Amino acid sequence: MNALGLIVEYNPFHNGHLYHLERSREISGADGVICVMSGNFIQRGEPGVVNKWARARAALYSGADLVLELPAVYSLASAESFACGGVAILNATGVVASMCFGSESGKLEELDMIADVLYREPEEYREELRAWLDRGFSFPRAREEALKSYLKQKAGRQVPLQDILNQSNNILALEYLKALKRFNSGIKPLTIKRIANAYNSQEFTGGISSATAVRKALQSWKTALSLHQIEAVVPPASLEVLREEFSEGRGPVFLGDFEQLILAALRRIPAENLREVPDVSEGLEHRLKKAAENSGTLEELIGSVSTRRYTRTRIQRILLSLLNGITKKDLDLFRSTGGPQYIRVLGFNRKGQELLAEIKEKSSIPIITKTADYKNSPNLSLARMLEIEAATTDIYVLAYPNPAHRKAGQEFTQNPVRV
Image 1 (cartoon, rainbow, N blue to C red):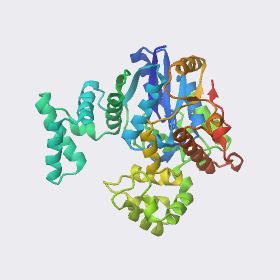
Image 2 (image 1 turned 60 degrees about the vertical axis):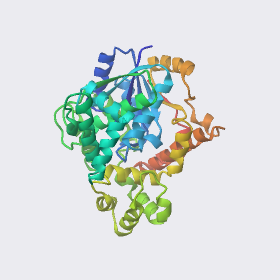
Image 3 (image 1 turned 30 degrees about the vertical axis):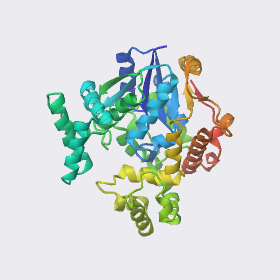
Image 4 (image 1 turned 120 degrees about the vertical axis):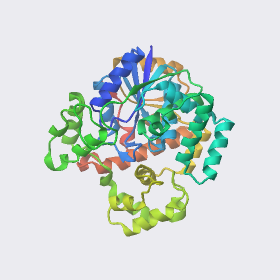
């Protein structure tokens, strides 16, 4: 089967995601769509507004055929690790012919040219980079100037690097392309130019608006008890999934719902142990400890620690990694054992079932449909990755409005969604 791969979050699934999915299928000529989707916590350092199985269901109702999970150690990581985890899983299926990602640029040739330099790091580029760093420039500025100089020499033309390197979807696109090169993958990359507003815009802009704007509107659910605000920007099937989850008391879930847990975890942990949390470096542990002692709210804490150097999303990822017990030692273990240890199935339709049968014949890593079967795996790296996943779900469900749904162990009792 000619399968298309997408790396997604769908938090929640909206009209822009529907456009991307349908357009990707069209330009790839694929007859099956596989989504690798973040679990209960996402790369922006936030929880999913509804759980991963609900978001998988919305994706399947909207045109996806098979939804696989991106483990939390990748979904709560930097853009580079997030992309590496997603591409590694698509590559491991053995059935994905192409992958498509959105970008503000929309120009694959330019993006690939830049990604190639960043991946290979030729000596001329490294010399330029060192020279700019030695002059006291920040790494992002030094990288931009070094790339500009190198590409002008080698490609003989100017590339709008500032626009490319400062826009979120372009940055992820570069990381996807680097990951494909790193794995020497045969997957063909494709890109679609992002339309409508920026990914982090908080305002609605017609039928296609950002997930940030949708989430902002959803926060009114707790008082307004209505989804009418997002009806114009979310497909009916996705809207119905949200309505079902909210009516059952399994959402909406927001970062603020973990405020007390995060503040307690930060106040309790010694500063030297905080250094073991991914992305904590250069004395940041002391800034976090001081902020935790002097802040009465999570928003106050994040605001007092965030700077241009330590972005809000980085701080939020650190806080959620701490909350979920993810350490640098874990990341080192997974790096040393080859990355993602399994292909976890969140949901599928009839065509997805056919894809799964083909993947089982070709996959280079285990396919998990029943997590309980792998709970005591002799593969220690796999067992630890799954242990972290179970912990993130146990933490996530504590934010459900309905206490009846907060029981632990749901990672081992919830079956894949069948549509």
